[in-house]
Length: 103
Image 1 (cartoon, rainbow, N blue to C red):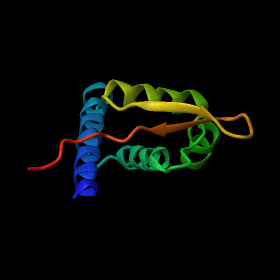
Image 2 (cartoon, rainbow, N blue to C red; image 1 turned 90 degrees about the horizontal axis):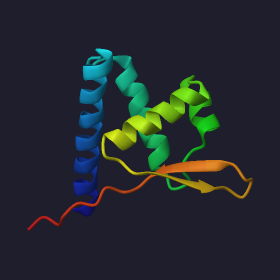
Image 3 (cartoon, helix red, strand yellow; image 1 turned 60 degrees about the vertical axis):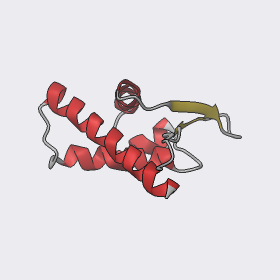
Image 4 (cartoon, rainbow, N blue to C red; image 1 turned 180 degrees about the horizontal axis):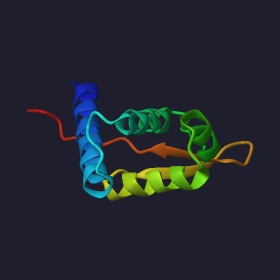
């Protein structure tokens, strides 16, 4: 049940991000950019997270575009955390969305 609530919270955040994109960039929900954003979210939700370089390489984005996406996620209400990997490289993750238990 908790996983289902987490997924609902995730979908609500994704829809908020899509609305932001449409308002500021004129994108539609069927735009391939939404698929790319979903891929970036998936990478950030992994337990190991993802580096700016990894996201950029996988999605074909420049580093400043990846960092701008992090800013967009923060503006949409998501918490993007940063930590250092053993290699010294910064790794970014999305904090879990806390949802109230369903009663």
